[in-house]
Length: 438
Image: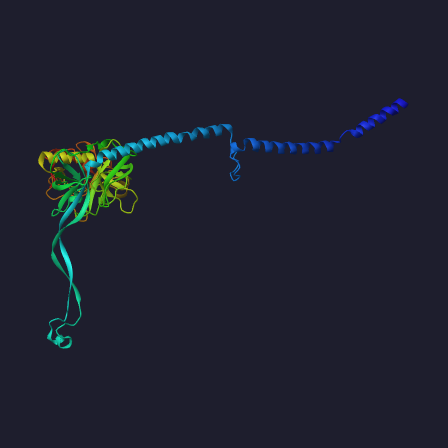
C-alpha cells in the first residue's frame, strides 16, 4: 500500500507541472506573433530596397513575383535600342536637310504699287463769305485727303520653290506666281538672288515652272510618288510665313488620293485632286516647297493646309511634276489631255441615298458657275450630258482610288478613248477624242 500511495503522489505532482491545453494555445499564439514580427523585420531589412522601400519612406510597397521582376529588368534595356533608332532617323533627317537646302529657294514677287500720301484741305478756303469772318488765313478747319504720289516697287508676296535641273529650272505653286504683272526674284539659301522667268503655269494643277539664267545649279532628285506609303517619314522645307527661309518640319504621310477645294489664291477656289496628305507642318509661305522622303527625294510639292485643323497639309504628287517638266522642255508649255466634264466620284453611301443605279463611277454634275459638260469640249461633242455616270475609261474602272482625272492624264492630246457610260438605267459605250486643255 505504501508503495502505491507513493506512486500516486508522484503522478499527481507530474500532472500538476504539465501545461494545460489553454496554456499551450496561448503560448502558440504568442510564439507565432513573435516569429511573424521577426520575419517582417528581416524581410524589410533585406529585401526592402529590392521592392522599392528605402530610406525615403514615401514609395509604395510593391510585391512582384521574381519572373515579373526579370521581365521588367529586360524591358529597361529596350530604350537604348529605341534611342539608337531615333538617333539614326535624326541623322537621316539632318543629312537630307543639309544636302537639299542649297536647292530650295524663296520666290518673291515685286510690282509697282501706287504711293499714297495724306494731305489736308480747308473746306472753306477761298470762299469770300467765310473770308469775312476768318480773314485770309483760312478758317482753321482741316480735312484729311489721300492722293497718289507716283509708284514704287514693293514685295507683294512670297513663296517657296526648288531647283529641278542644273540648267536652272525651278518648280513652285501656280498661286505663288499667279500675278502676271509682277516681277519674280529667286533668293538662294546662301543669300544670292536673281530674276526668274515664268515658263509655264499648269492649267490643271497648282504648279508652275520657272527658269533662272546660268547653269551648274544644285538640283533635287525626283522620287516616285506612286511608291509612297502611309506612315512613312515626310520632310517639308519652305519659306515659312514668308520670313523664315528653309524652315524644316518633319512628320509622316497621313493619307493618299485626297481631294480638296483650295482657297486663298488670286484665281479663287480651285479643286485639287489626288493629293498627298501629311502632318508635317506646312505654314503660309511654305507653298511650292518640296516634300521629301528620308532618301532626300522629292515626293510632292507642298500646296495647301486645312483651315481650322492642326497639321493637316497637302502636297501634289511629284509624278505630276515630272510630266509638267517634260512637257515644258518639249513644247515650252504644260499640255494635258482634256475631257471637259465636271464630276463627283460615287460612293456606295451616295449611290444608296440618291438611288443612282451604280455604286461606282463619276457622276457628271454641274456646279454653281460651272456646267457638268463644257460646251464645245470633247465630252460635249461625244454627246455626254449632266446626270451621266462614266463607269470606265478604256476598261479601267473609276472609283475613289482611281479618279477620272487621273486616268485621263495617262493619255495624250488627240488620243481616242472609249468610255462606258450609265444613263437612265442602261450602259453604253461612247468614243471620245481628247483635246488640249486651254
